[in-house]
Image 1 (cartoon, rainbow, N blue to C red):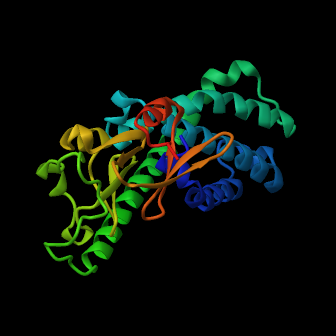
Image 2 (tube, rainbow, N blue to C red):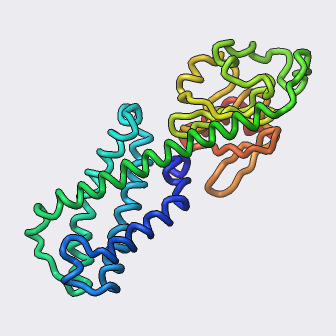
Image 3 (spheres, helix red, strand yellow):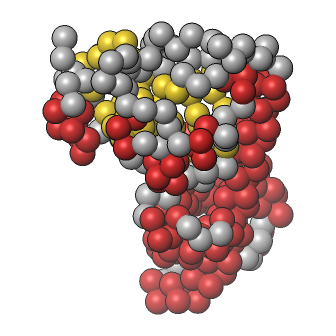
Amino acid sequence: MRESPYVRSLPYHLPPMIGIALVMAVTGPFGTYERMDFVHRLASFGIIGLLSWLQVILLAAWFGSIEPIDRWPVAGRMALVGVLAAVPSTFEIIVVYSWLGQPIPLSMAPQLFPQNAFLTVVISVVIGLFVEQRLRANADAERARVAALPQPQPFQSQASQPQGDAPGPASPDFFRRIPPALGRDLLALEMEDHYLRIHTALGSDLVLLRLRDALAELAPGRGRQVHRSWWVAEGAIASVDRTASRLVLVLRNGLRVPVSKTHRDQVREAGWLAG
């Protein structure tokens, strides 16, 4: 879940969420203007908003790991996230209001849920569209940066790639996605939601492609998947960083790639951890 763009974009969501809580504290919707002073309204909307926001982010990150749901349009997926997040947040509203001296009977939960769900769905969809827009903006910026790089010569040496029994070149269907400025020394592929970051010895580029589709286009012996979000090419590893809880592959360009427990045995059997 730490690899999810929703989790990684948490710092960008915080200012808008604080702004929404402040606006609601000033306007006092749902009868809170008459029942509470400004301080209590700010505390209630701040606490409830923070909890709901975190629940939306965690659910969105989890749904991103579920293949069938991950294929849904962003708005539909995030609307479902909002409805589910509204279930615990409805009871959180009751608890927070009671703590602030404005008790709400538990029997009111069915009446509170529709209003709360509406707000949570709206916020969830806005967050989803924001993350999608940010990914597209990053892709455009990366393409502009790559386009400004000097074009490599066609006869550029590939001596850094494995020789002898090294696997053959990848399918042209995949390499046509890589800007010529990045060359053909493929090091790794990194999944970012519906996007794929292609890492080569000369840089990286972000394309609209799923990791599973990229692996289908690549020759099976070209490399291996080491994490749900990472694929590493043969000959790309410079060293291995081992800690008590994590295993990280350090590539020739300095990129650090985590190895998940699911793929650790396969990586070890491939001889990538030797030395």
